[in-house]
Image 1 (cartoon, protein in one colour):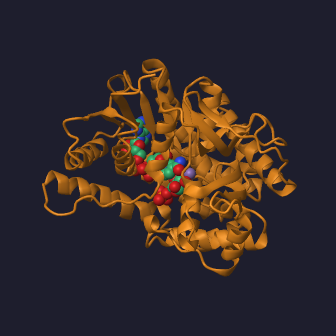
Image 2 (spheres, rainbow, N blue to C red):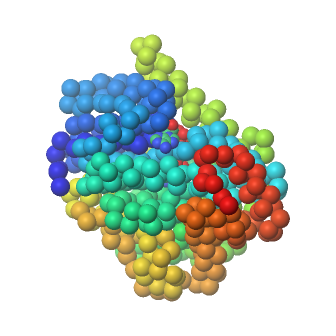
Image 3 (spheres, rainbow, N blue to C red):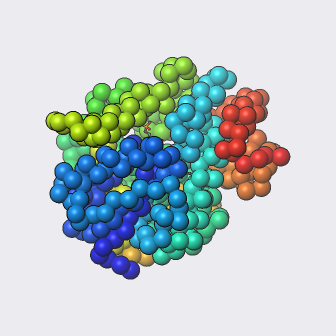
Length: 444
Ligand code: NAD
Ligand code: G6P
Ligand code: MN
C-alpha cells in the first residue's frame, strides 16, 4: 500500500461537513501525507463553493503548493488513482430530508432523518446513490479504502455487504464519540482515557461499560449517577443548538427509566415516539434548521472567499467528526490498531444475535481493516428484542430494494419500531413512493 503522496477523494465534496474533514486532514498531515484532494459531487455549484472554501483553507495553511486540489462531477476523473475515499453523500439533498421528516408527522409518527420511516425513505434513496459510489471505487480504484459516513448507516452498509462483499470499506458514525465528548466535557473527564464497550445497531445501541485507564475501573456507574443528578448541556461544537439540548434531556430520561446502561440518544425515537413528536414542530423540522443554519453559512463562506473579503471567513465547528474518520485512515495506513465504533457484520460479536446483522461495536482498525471485538457476554432480552425487531425491519427494507418488492417494503414499514399500526405504515409508504419518484427503486 502506498504510504506517501496519497490521493484523497471526498465523495459528496459539496457537503457542509467537508471543511471539518479537511481541517482534520491538514492537522494530521504528518501521519497522513496526502498530496492531492479531489472533491467529487453531482451538484456542480455546491462542489464549486466547497472548492473555493477548501482552496482558501489550503492557502491559509501554506499548503497550496504541496496539495493539488481538484473538483469534478465525473466519476472517471475522480476515482482513478485514489488511495482513500471519504464518502458523505446526501441523495436528494436537504429538500428530500424535509420530506422524510414531514410526511410521517402528518400521520402522527416520528419524522426523523435516520430513524423511523423518514430513515427508511432516506435509506431507499441512499442505497442507490452509495452503491453507485462503491461501484466506481470497485471499477476505478479497487485497492483504495472507502471510509463511509453516508447515512442511514445500517441500511447502506447492509446493502453494500450484499452487493460488494469484498470492498475495502469502513462504515462509521460519529454519534458515540459525540456522546462521549459531551459527557466528558460536562462532567470533567478525559475521553482519551476511555475504553468503552458498546453494542447495537447504528443509532440504536447501548454502552455497557466505560473503563477509564486513569483510575483503572469502569466509570459507567458514576456517569449514570451524574446523569441522574445533573442536566447534560450541549458541548461547544453544538453550542446554541436547541435540538441537541432536547436530545440530551431525552438521554437522561432514558437512563432514569432504564438504568444500568447508557443508551444512544437516537433511541428516543423508538422508546418515546410520543414525546419526540411533541417537541418537534411539524412545519419546521431539523431539515429546516439545517438549511437555515449550516447550509446558508457554507454559502456565505464561499461568497466571502470569492469576494476576497478581509477578516475571519471560516466559520465552522463540527467537534470530533472530521478527526474521527481521519484517525481511522491513519490507523489503516500505519497499522495502528486503534479502537473505533464501527458498523460491521455481527459474525458473533454479539453472541446471541443473528450473525448476518449489521451491528455497531468496538473494532480495532489496521492495514487489513476492521477487527471487531467479541462482547463475550449475552445481551439482555430487552435490548435483544428491540434490536431483533428493528434489524428484521431493516433487512426487509434492503430486500425490498433489491427485489423491487412493495410487499417487503410494507412489512419493513410496519415492523419499524416507531410504528404502531399497518394503516399509517401503508399510507406513509404510498406517500413516499410518490414523493421520492425516481430516487427510489420501482416497487411492484
Ligand atoms: P449535504 O446535503 O450538505 O451534502 C451532501 C452532498 O452530497 C451534497 O453536496 C450533494 O450534492 C452530494 N450528493 C448527493 N448525491 C450524490 C451522489 N449520488 N454522488 C455524489 N454526491 C452526491 O449533507 P450533509 O448534512 O453534509 O450530510 C452528508 C452525509 O453525511 C449525509 O448522508 C448525512 O446523513 C451524513 N452524516 C453522517 C454522520 C455520521 O456520523 N455517520 C454525521 C454527519 C453527517
Ligand atoms: C449525528 C449523527 C449523524 C447525523 C447527524 C445529523 O452526527 O451521528 O448520523 O447525520 O448527527 O446532524 P444534523 O445537524 O444534520 O441534524
Ligand atoms: Mn450517525
